[in-house]
Length: 383
Image (cartoon, rainbow, N blue to C red; front, side, top):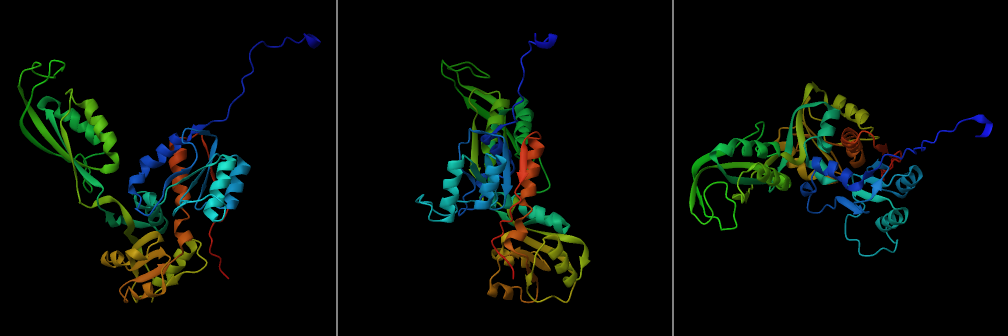
């Protein structure tokens, strides 16, 4: 050995960077805000990239711009998670003639995946509107316009002695929530009949013989985006070889998802004081607003992004002010002195969405590198 030094024969271990498959990252985001909750015009989800690919880090932004792409390339981020989708309308060509085409071409060349969570994360409890409400300090919050067409009803037939365990499995998977109540179900006793073939292995009775079993029909409701998980857990807990169940679509409002939010200030504020407070919290360079009311602000309605379509719902909620962005000239006439409109700006209202992405990923994947973009992607400038 050189210099008489005994060198270790142990292999030198190279520490590899911590990596995650894109589909694992996506799963964490979509368990919180299912793509099935997005509006019909939206295009959330993975727009560019191989979902099975492993990446070392992600970059979070509100919008994907050329500057954001440069930032991702510089730090080696293999995935960009944005609030707004790059591909919003049709993408019929890839010639680089439009902003979206140029971003997509660059993403492919740089092997950077693009994922967005837009109106789906707008609509969930704990999402964009909840974050805005938290920043304002609202209490007793509720969805301003609850979603419809989300809920379904499950009816499953279970032998009496197994009803409790099957019911619990369904509840644990996310079924049975009605307002502030959980584990909600309706149960009816009856008798089920079945006759298995010679190839069957029945829970009770004998193959080829008609059998009657005392059963309980368990009914409960669930959000449709949890259907596969609920059915899977139900079958795992059910003793029958073939499980009999029905699923019905419902038109009931789903109060745990929808657009906008309304809540109450703990301490009512003077309207001018409230506007100054909004300007400071959301770093708005200017706030456009309708006539200032002659009463204090107590109840606040809000919607991240373009929210003029919810002005009527905000009035009906009893709000003293409606906070959102992108109001047109005639929208400011709508309150008719009964409610003040405060337009804080589209970008300003949604800027804290990145905090939600960051918290979701770092909580579930603590060793993974998640970066905030340092690029200001607000396309609106003030003179």
